[in-house]
Image (tube, rainbow, N blue to C red; front, side, top):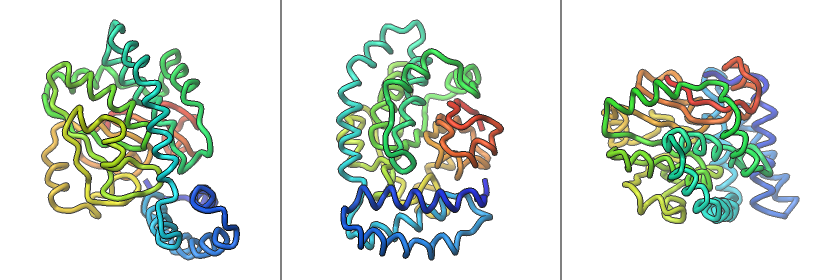
Length: 281
């Protein structure tokens, strides 16, 4: 996927969201925001938007001297954990626990404070469970799972990682081995090892980081050790729009679980903004 002109105002808006989470100092907000214009000016439109967004957020963290999303990430983890017991019961009572937990994992992708300033988690759960997905490759997903016992699971956001835990627990209950992957450093509200611990996921399966602070999964920016893991994976479950942007062209058996949150990605997919997808590569 390439960046489009419509990405440029979004780069600026995402910067402002991060700054408002990170500081109440309006002079500092203005100074950092003006500095990000240099990263936006140098945006390589032949690359996915995630490349430019990564540079922008590196600059923001450096100039603020902290991760502006750390507090909201923990808050999201706590809120999702409050929902976890009832959602777990729903999965266990379901006629098809895999279907239920997959839908919940997609619903959890709404927790994205890099794009939204507020989210309706409960409403999105209801939508995911009671409406059709815009792209639903569930039968192919079932078939792919039947042919492998090892899964590489690329997590996306904090809070959302609790919903990933539900799907991963379901996969493990069917005899699968899951290796979950989080980011190697803070970037927006993406999950790190700290979030894996807070969410309880670290107690469910092995969790590693990908050695990168990039938005999505930009393989060229990951260490050789992770590249090898990714190359050898027989089946990848990829969460979130950023991973779709950066891995959509990979020659790999990948199932993308996400919500289309921006006009550019939605246009690429030929779908309305806000569409939910379980899409095979």
